[in-house]
Image 1 (cartoon, rainbow over the protein chains, first blue to last red):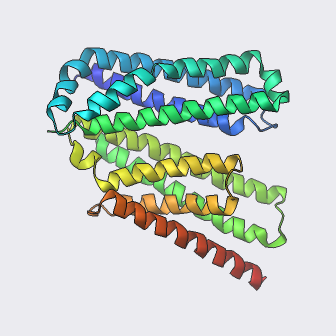
Image 2 (cartoon, one colour):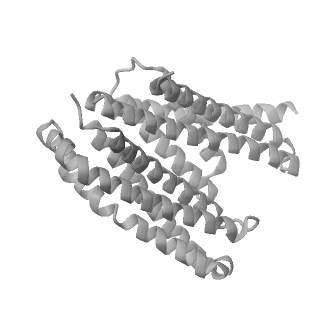
Image 3 (spheres, rainbow over the protein chains, first blue to last red):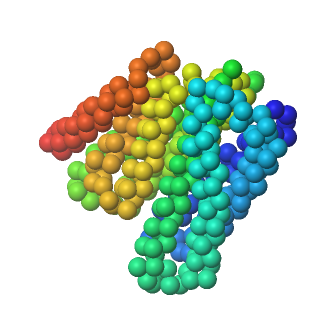
Amino acid sequence: MNNTLIFFLVAHIFLGTFGIIFLTAYLLSIFKKENGVKWLKINSLLALLSFVGSWISGGYYYASYYGKSVKPIILKGDYPWVHTVLMETKEHVFLFLPFLTLVIFATTYFAHSDIAKDKKLALSVAGLCFTTVSIALAIMLSGIVISGAVGK
Amino acid sequence: MDWNVFLRELHVLGAALGVGGSTFVEIFTIKFAKDKKTDIFEHEVLKVCINVVRIGLIILTFSGLGLLVLWRMRLLGPDVFYSGRFLAKMTILLILLFVALLMNFKFVNLRLGSAVSTACWYAAMILGIARGLDLSYFAIMAGFGIFVVLVYFFLEYARKSYLRSK
């Protein structure tokens, strides 16, 4: 693996994790009155940028290295289901994350006054945020399991 | 200093902040419980401790991910990634995160959530130190379950003993 690929792999992992952290911070602050909408807007924007960045860097790594060099090793190894089940699921479910985060970001930007007043809407956004964090965590764990299937 | 040493040191620092912060959250919670209300100063002290725990968790997560990248590049594979100790550490980290969210929304009793959170930090530290531990995932998680119960009852005992002594 050359330095460019290492950079994209690290960027993919770290940006994805930052996305989870920003969405968790969003979730923790959605019902707090003292912080207002400012941090909700910042966290949703940073989460969106992180997931988009992770999407692009992961896509580059997958297209230029994983398919040619990693996938055959996993399929020949003791754990082929790691690719056929986990990676196949990950690469499809992962597509949802930027769009789910975009919905959270757009709702926060265009309906922030409603979020502050309407508890039902705030609960719905919190539910969407929790779902997105859960999916992102599941994808992150899948990534760790996939990395573990590549041995000597 | 190579990346491995740097990331390991960061990982230890994150664990130290998390374990230390959660310990002091418990100590101060017990100490501040004597008048059954939290004033502004007490609230600020607890907030600082919780922020230390959060910083510890972030350092621990990123240094851990850095170590995973190194292991991946060295092709350490299933022996490390699928070991009971590693999978148990990942599970405990997830429990820690979900308990923090549940406590924030008051879906879980604060004393119980706090005990689980403290137990998670100590368990992660013990698993980090016990490098030679060769137990299955289920054996480690069963031990963790017993450990959580012990920590809960220990904290309840400490709380009652302190309140009786005042």
